[in-house]
Image (cartoon, rainbow, N blue to C red; front, side, top):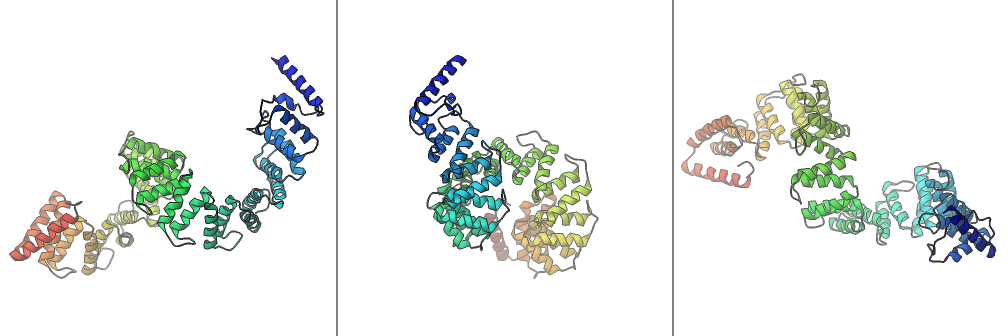
Length: 530
């Protein structure tokens, strides 16, 4: 076989010599030319190409270099490709200069050298090559091969954009949004996004959708946002696919369609979009748009969690904690809670604090429990603030402190946490950590009662019965006590029924009938508690 190749090579050299090429040709014929090359020519055409390249023709050098690259006619040889591309570049071929710059940037056939990449991109850009100008702008942005200079980056970005390069137009839109190297201008940014988007650039279509969604440089318009997300999504743009799925999930800009949301989440998730993977996991875990399937939920949460999505890490921890699909494993739950908590996810911090407080998956450590619960509360998580206040109130983990309890419960209540509203009302009623104030107690307890907190409803009934903080009203006492009953435990129900019946005895038959009708209407409108 070796002799056969040698004979073939010798014969090819003779053919080249007959064409006046000579034999000092880097053994190009040893690369065994097939019948046709990537340009549709014959073997003879490629031999002639070599002859012209060796004679100093830059275009032939360029095509020969391309044939040494993957997909070319010759056996792939990055070093030879770079050699011929470099020769063409040195003779001033702008496209060759641009590709030679890329070779230095990627280390393809030459040692990676960003400085040389800048040099050749610059040479090509000076000849009006818009791709080279765009790439040069990116290198100035990153400070690779040249000192970082946003103004120079903007200069070349504008040149490329004006020359019609859609990637540069999209990049210029981003630059104007951020105000890097030029004055921030959302309207101009939107204009450039639109210019590139109308030419079919998927990134620009996605960014134009963002502009319409956020109202940046244009009036907020979810319908238009969905239109542009769809254009990009249909080209396979993963972020646009996720955003379009979100539009369908929330019914923004399109008619709400949870099944269609899943379709787009899946397309994006299969491309590795981490948010889509987490969203698809959530859909499977809740049965939203697809039949509930915890096994599939686990699969997608795991994919997203492995990519570092905090929400997915928390959900994965929760599945281990509850033993859903996987064996219950508190230690694994702590592992995933810890990852999410370290990223600042307050629900994970609270869950991790609870694990340390109860010694689940980790040795019991009240100090660490306090740190994580406090971290979540300090970030403004209402549930964490309520729990922190409750812990101060009872002296668990933290030293008992009624004033601190009231401070944290108040923070949570002001964010609308229903349990905190009820508890704050209780603190005002008892004067614990705050000045005793029945009227203020009634305000907060009423807020919680309106949100179906049964304890608050029963308490409010008592306030109306006694006229504490509110005008005494047997009808209101009856109403709130009656609607609270189904949400109370057995002992609490007994007390509520007794108090309600005492209020009923003080009503006229007509008054009793009226308030019973009112209570029945409430239960119809609030079925969750009934």
